[in-house]
Length: 297
Image 1: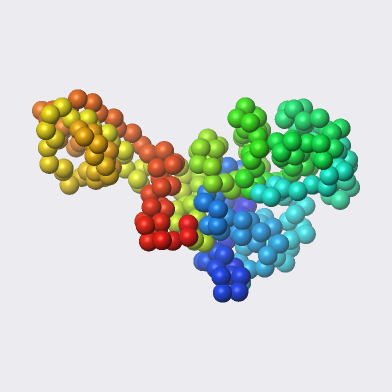
Image 2: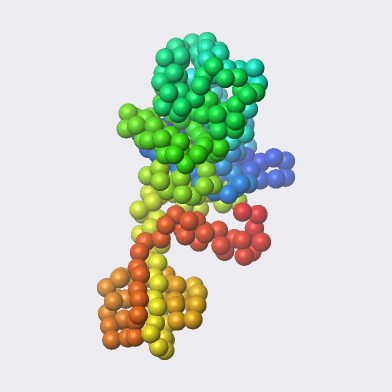
């Protein structure tokens, strides 16, 4: 079952395009990464999903309900952390949980305290006296304490130290195992790669990739580093050499590793490395041609 379904979604701001023709499905229980640099269209997509913006055309649905027409019903089962989280300075964590619970008509204090213990947050501290990381922790607790079916997180680990990021990711994995769907929007490649099992890449308001990380890596071929001893041979057709640094080639292999090994037999190879590209390499490939054309991505 798809928890989020987007079809031909476009949202413009006057003459300026936010997103255009976006199509996406997010399966139930998935850890779904929504990846792109600032200005690519991630936040616009999220605001449409949450009913904060009305689509210019196309459709978006959560739990099979229209995101604009059924926004109130959808929000009852969604936890959201915005990229520009702001909380009233007089809030304490306990007061925030109490007020949010009253608004949602759900008991949030018990689970909120459990989350605060996991994330090491003192719920008696006022927001005005909290560090950026503490405010972020409170936002995450408020998003999760009512045990939503869907978590929509926009740059959620901003301000968290690396150890706390690891702990938060483990909490999200536990939620996903219990059936919660996580829609994780970020421009931080390493944390998307560490958490998500599927990813969509957005560029200039359009989806340019939507696949599992494993599938993306397979489509991208292999990364190859060859260090030659002596004179390097002519480049074969199945190797695309991106850079040469003296006797070192950095290349992309478009065919099988076996073919590369056969070709290298008897040649003056000093060192060789072959592997699947990481998410950063994949991301740069999707954006490189656009940046060379002067695109805003």
